[in-house]
Amino acid sequence: MPLTSSDGSTSDGQNGGAQPTGDTVDVRDDREKSRFEAWFRGELAGIAYYELRAGQLTFTHTEVQPQFEGHGIGGALAHDALTAARASDLPVVPLCPFIADYIGKHTEFLDLVPGPVQKRLGL
Image (cartoon, rainbow, N blue to C red; front, side, top):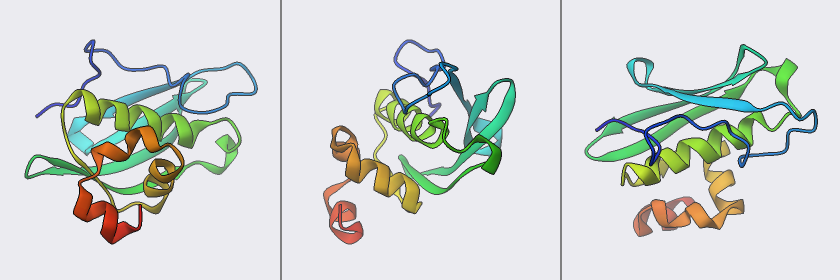
């Protein structure tokens, strides 16, 4: 099942985290590589890897390039990836500690995580 936003477009990441410079983060789903990519100032700044199996989206690892830290890249990446999962009606398994922590702090996404997984991960 493809991951898309509810309107079929990619998000600019403005709701995902603070961008003190006023720049935006463009988050894209690269389905061939099973990852969400965060582009900032024309460069690949962050990646959230996932596995799509058995009708659920499992986040395995997230990274932001050191030179892009402090620009809200990780938050935008998590926000937009979780928003895409919601738009595609996919439950989320956040094995990646960053995504799990993001969900813990942004409980509006907690409903995406099945109850037994929430309990196992302490969410």
